[in-house]
Amino acid sequence: MTVTPTMKLPGAAKDAKPGNTKAGGGRESNLILGKARTDRPTREEAESAIRTLLLWAGDDPDREGLVDTPARVARAYEEFFAGYDADPVEMLNRTFEEVEGYDEMIVLKDIRLESHCEHHMVPIIGKAHIAYLPKNRVVGISKLARVVDAYAKRFQVQEKMTAQIANSIEDVLQPRGVAVVIEAQHQCMTTRGVHKPGVSMVTSRMLGAFRHDPLTRREFLTIIGNPASSVGA
Ligand SMILES: [Zn+2]
Image: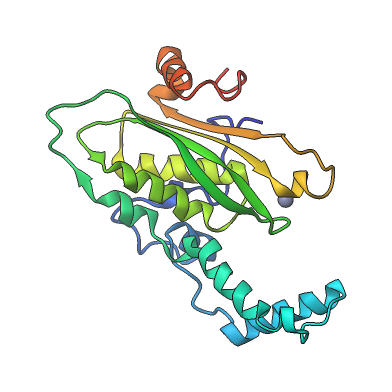
C-alpha cells in the first residue's frame, strides 16, 4: 500500500513548525512535538497491569519464572517506546549550513526500523529509506536515523509514521524535496490473524521535487532498489 502525497494524515508533523514548538495544547500535537504525557501512571501501576495480563493469559505470575517478568517488561517498554521522550524537531534543528553549495540528493537507505503496531501492540520490523534535496542546510546522517527512531519507538501505524518522518524533515530543513519509503513486516499479520509471513508493507511519502519530478523520484527509487514497483507510480 502506498501513502499518496496528497493524503492528509491526522497527527502528521505538519504542525510541527520550527520555532513554533510551544504552540498547540492538544495531546496529539504534544506527541508530535515529542513531548511525553505528564500524567503517566507509576511504574508500580504498569507492573501491576502486566501481572494482570499474565493472570488473564492463564499463568501464575507468582511462579519462579514469572516473578520478575512485570519489572522486565516495564523496562523493555521504556526502550520500545523511548520515542515519546524524543523531540524530532530539536534533533533536526542542528544543521550544517556550510556545505560548499552541495545540492545533490542525499540518501540514507536500509535504516533498521523497530516499531509497534498501535492496534495489537506487537512489533513492526523493517527498514526505512530517506532522501532529501538540500537547500542551504544539511543535517548529520545519524540525525535522520534518530528521527526514524523518534517516531518508530511509539505505538504506530506505518502510513502515519512514514508521513511524520517526511513532514518533520520538510518542516525543519525546508529542502527542495523529501522522500521516505518504509518496508516492514507486521507481526499482527505474521504471527496472528491471517498468519501471512513474508508479506511486507511498503509505504511512501514524496514531497517537493520527489513528488513533482518523475526523474528525481526514479533516481531515488533505483538507489533504494525499487522496493515496490507501485511506489511513486
Ligand atoms: Zn496490528
